[in-house]
Image (cartoon, rainbow, N blue to C red; front, side, top):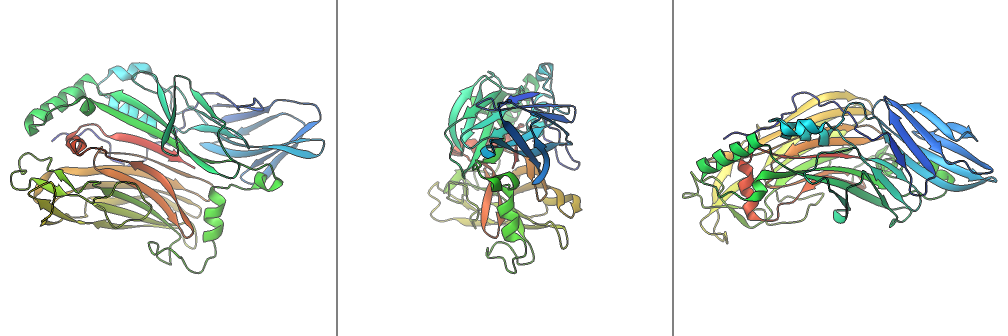
Length: 444
């Protein structure tokens, strides 16, 4: 079997592809980024003055409506807009540099099309301007087959657009929202030929979906309140670290007391059973028992595999891996009323790579390739890279399009969903033999 994929033995550059201009919904602020420089320009109004905070530190206070800063990757800012001594608005801005990642349409006509799109997706972040009553997201020109971008909010599709920005005014102060931009593409001619050859060898009936693949870029934002405290608070990251910091015990059973954060990536079969995708063994093992659950969840003991990375930012900084593979069973009927054991696959294909382990600065990767006992192929393949500090979290990766995937950050008082991919039909398990994987990125 041939699979076209990238294994994270080295770090993909954390480049950020952004258009040079983003404007808030009410035109209060314009953000320009170029060559490591960001310019925040506020619309001047009579008797207004401004306070600009960077990482909860006051950087500027005065009437000048233009602020310039230099950024390495991305940066969050808080802006307070005052008039006659009163705070009128709080703006939360995330800016990102665009120099590392520029979409070249000519690259879509090459045999490396899939790898090129993977790189674009994994290295792109959504820029945002968030006010007390609106969210503006913006992205660069991205590869999409029909140039129509799909916008999701908390996993619900809310719009399609050909623009490179989207404004949402249906928000409430104090709440968090996950915005996802989804792109869709078809494989190159060279990859299509590989899929056809694989289908003949494995006796698979081809469908249009086997020649299509998507990518997603997500960000988590919080709607600020118009209060002085909002200027020095990060309502997403601060509660995670403040409540974890100094707590003598960890209340969540999934996290050992010596660790503060757990990054849990699970694969699972959402159905009671699926037809064995390996035609060479499906006479002996017609169906594989599933985990019989559908929705992603922060904690579950129903999975095919789990890779749990424990992370400590200090005292001392540390990254460790706990891995688990559930027993495999086969059935003679789809009802799977009498499952028989196949044994437990080796967990040796789950590996942790530590790229950087410093106080308040962690970066690691997980590579995953786990099969089914007595069935040589296919394996469940995925990989991801994550970067955590006390100010931000970034992750990106790629995976087979079956089975289902879920990735969560768990901490003493809550959880954050990083990414999920849900299989909706048992026929999608034929995609385990595909040569193209889905790519994703996330930040908060």
